[in-house]
Image 1 (spheres, rainbow, N blue to C red):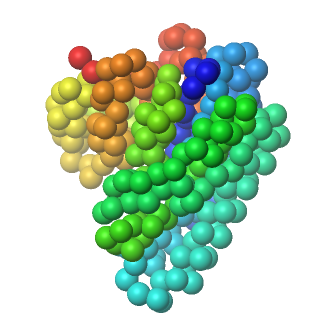
Image 2 (image 1 turned 135 degrees about the horizontal axis):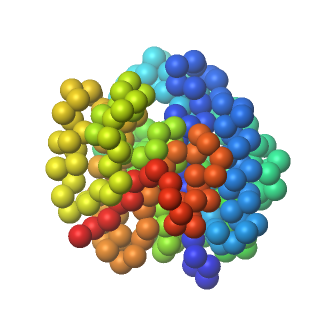
Length: 272
């Protein structure tokens, strides 16, 4: 890319209330959009690809109809269609929020560019994404159901796709924004005194996962274990200079502080 590219994944836990199906956080979306817009205006971000989780608009119907298990029969087709409609509602809410902040987003669908094999993204055509980014648009991609050569279809991981985009578009940084300030040794939502982990070394990831697992939680810190594991393929990119951080955008200003390298609670991912 001609300009330094930043890829930001806005987690479903950030934009939606996962305890209430089909509910988005209006105030959070407005704050997130405002801050991202200002980062672009101030030159803290030169070129941008945005991704978002589907949270409470996608997970409930996917689980209800076993869509995450792949194509099981024609009785799933109408539920899949309705799930896509529900997620489309969230997509357009996010688009409007970003446009209101002056961000020229271009809504794109991973299912039109990516196919998988057993939930692993194997084939992708990113030329449209590259093209819109090169002229100054901000592509927006969300969670999606992908055609899968083994399962029929499978749930596409936004974190997995974010790493692929970083590789193919030679991104400078990858930021995973959620409702928690990075990685903790325990679930900070349940234990406010949980100790934060400021730096994670991918070369010794097992030790970090073990520290997180001592709580006995299935997945501490809001599914952060899965996020860390999805970053393993990014190891060579990080070795070459890709900056990776996990932070919260529940409060305005965290993203700016992170980009300015000012003190802010976050987890940086390195390879040593």
